Amino acid sequence: MKPNVVRVGHAVLYVKDLEASRRFYVDLLGFNVVHETENALYLRGYEEREWSLKLEVHPEPGLKHLAYKVAGEAELDRVIDLAKAHGLPWREEEERGRPRMVRIQDPFGFPVAFYYRAEKHERLLQAYHRYRGPGIQRLDHFNVLTPDVQGTYQFYAEAFDFRLTEYTEDDEGRMWAAWLHRKGNVHDLALTNGTGPRLHHIAFWLPDLHAIIRAADILAAAMQTDRIERGPGRHGISNAMFVYLRDPDGHRVELYTSDYLTVDPDLEPIRWSLNDPRRQTLWGHQTPKSWFLEGSRVEGFEGGFVALKDSPLKGLPQHVT
Image (cartoon, rainbow, N blue to C red; front, top):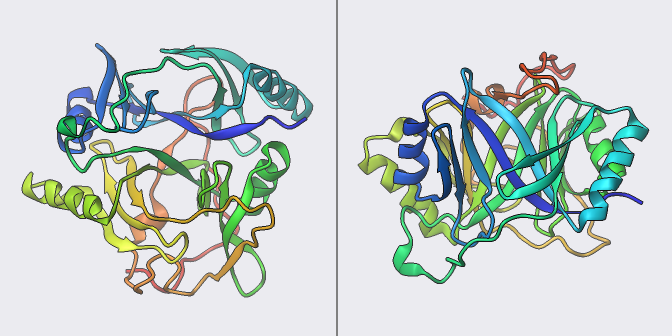
């Protein structure tokens, strides 16, 4: 049986200056601090009962791992069986409030962890008097840069039953990007063509468009407009409203809202042409080159960062600055 993945669970980012990260994530964006140590912050949104983002001090910025929540303890044993069957490195680990995780290095170099049990925290969803920043609700998805979008998609579809919702294809039928889900919205994991393996962004759900605008206003009022890389705008792919930010270490964070349900088992994936300017921004606005070219390095199984590979698919879509 395939491991039953429920949804995205958390991400652990390496940061160089924890206080600079606190000013960005907590003071400006309003994340709630669940735990803190001398070298780490554990954060969550207002809807979440578990922490979803850990910021850990490290000499170099990067991604420690991406994590998914599974449907039960038995699923972790299935992850181990899958790793053995595919010859993938794996080990059991733990994080604060997560007593058992199984970490693997997927065939494309990405560090991925799976867990079930997690410490629960006070419900804050309706504690509106405690909301700060734009009111970040929950972790929504991960996006990674990979030189083999087709192969990565096939692995996650076959190994973990991720389902395709939308994809980008060129005139020769080559897949340049893919959006895959488990929880029933447009994506838990997006794959973008590029030099990799690297993390492109992590995305957090906001309650509505006004919260997206409020996030931009907060950064502008704090004289932090250089943190806004792209948007606000509306994606063609996913139909969601968005704004992309860069944190003090260069990690990309998307604030995201208003996509659509994908729970029907016979959902037909939507194809987008690579050079359709509406796919990235429905209104046709150009996308900066940094959005296509830059990302965060990912940790190897034995430490250090994974060596990068260039994509055989060269060039950029025509609608970039």
